View 1 (cartoon, rainbow, N blue to C red):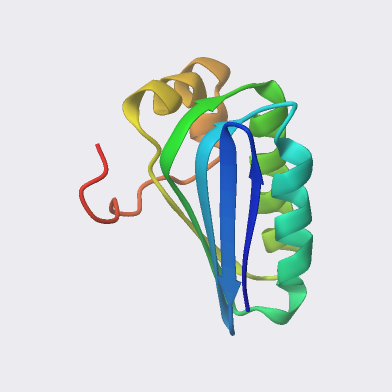
View 2 (tube, rainbow, N blue to C red):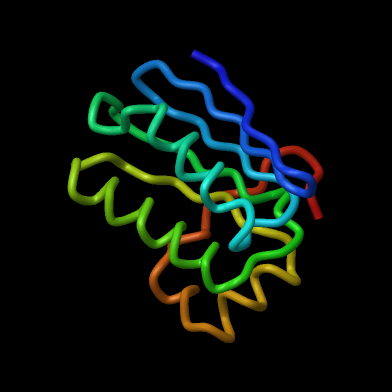
Length: 116
């Protein structure tokens, strides 16, 4: 299964078999979180063994986006699904640090490709 959900400055691509892939690009904010949540719901995470959340192309995140990422992590924990999060670009990582979310999300997975 592959699907792409997009708003003006946001896209999320999901694919899944036993392992789900969620690739986020653009801005994850109050306007785009509903599309992100719809994409995640479509994956039916409880049926997956693991999930990868690729934040390498995320350029902006607000408090609503932070909350959506924490909700995704909680959903994976509740379903005993291993969640791997690839690091976001430095400016987004800085928001994680300032908000304390960096202590809650493990973004220590290696970056994919040549993402800055």
